[in-house]
Image (cartoon, rainbow, N blue to C red; front, side, top):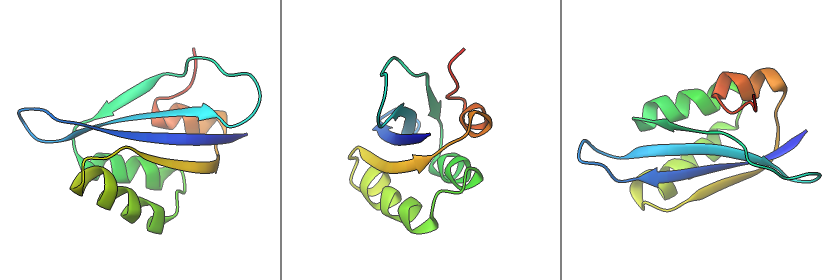
Length: 91
């Protein structure tokens, strides 16, 4: 299924954290879980583990980490196993 991944930077006293969530691009909507990752490296590793293009990860870093802006990655094909790996599978 095609998903849109959302990366939301969160300011905290111990440095930037990142909220990661995803939603279906088509079909029934609904609340999806989100996870918070404490470092950019953890977020980049999570995205890489589900085969997100390294160029998109670099682009996300420039926008989310360096500028503090929300970054969306569209047209991402994710399996249930990949959603679970990211901590985003509905229960």
